[in-house]
Image (cartoon, rainbow, N blue to C red; front, side, top):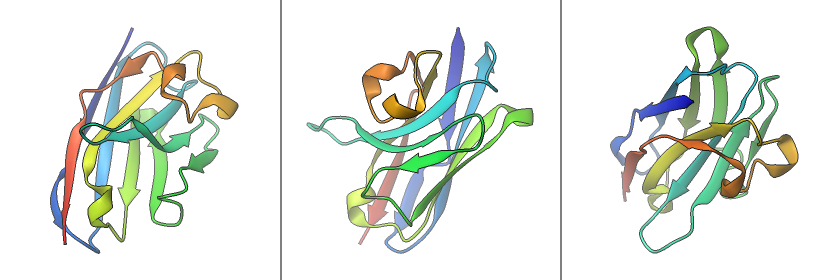
Length: 125
């Protein structure tokens, strides 16, 4: 079992930056691929970024060049640095992980077994 807790969300102005954190506890974290997703009411959960335990990262098209995922295995924590924020980035942001998710499948929410409770990011224009 893995527990995930996100933090760092809030209300920010367009163009600003914010860093989200996701602290993991429970089973081995270091060998798991971690994903970030976001969701707005009435819409499907959208893939934002994924980071493999090797450090390999992959991003959704809407955030490429603006968001950066990183991880600190010693702290069992992953981060999502979000820059040049836009109003359309407003969403509830989740981190997720699981033993089944791989690099080819990281963009699919069904690949993940464990989810955090989410942290809200609201970007005002």
